[in-house]
Length: 230
Ligand code: IYR
Image 1 (cartoon, rainbow, N blue to C red):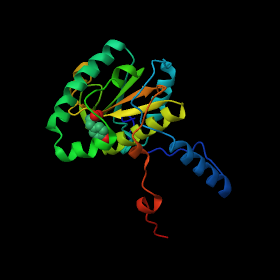
Image 2 (image 1 turned 120 degrees about the horizontal axis):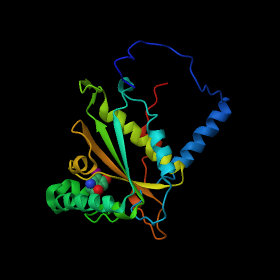
Image 3 (image 1 turned 180 degrees about the vertical axis):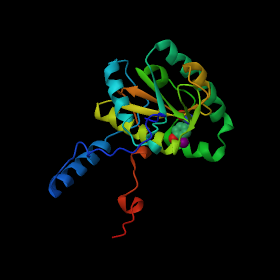
Image 4 (image 1 turned 120 degrees about the vertical axis):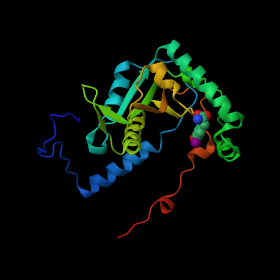
């Protein structure tokens, strides 16, 4: 972590070295793909509670993500309190009404049609946990002096990816929600002006009749997303 005292380079032996055979590597790579392709973005939740420790461990995983100069420019607020969730839902739906009433523009709204989203966001109350992810635009030392953070969108994006993978690995489903604009979350959750809310991750168990949009499951083939220079 960035601190005034920690400015010397001190190499340590690589910990946790893994040594797989070529064959084991292929098996592991395929197994992880097989696991991750079963992650679905879900909007319909049951009220089955999830222990706080599970959420904490998933956020610990997110916190292991690489980041610019290792500044770890993120903060997570985990909300299970129903009154808080309702306030977040109400504020988000107010923003979303403007968005879906035309604020988004025709092209954006057309792009969302196959996803089936609208301004109705019951999952923000139904899901047992909401994890609000904040990106720290700058950092502050204990005396309040500011320091720069680097590659903040990239770093927080990677941390969010780790978080979604961890939640999936723990047998949970999630939804990345991005109310637009999201400034209301700073005030509501008491976060400083140095932090920018980047997404709300709803977390829980899928309801019996949970649906996902068919198009969301059509992924580009490898030939389209990969070019190899060998
Ligand atoms: N924030 C809105 C709109 C939305 C935008 C995109 I891009 C999506 O992939 C899905 C939704 C909402 O949450 O409904």
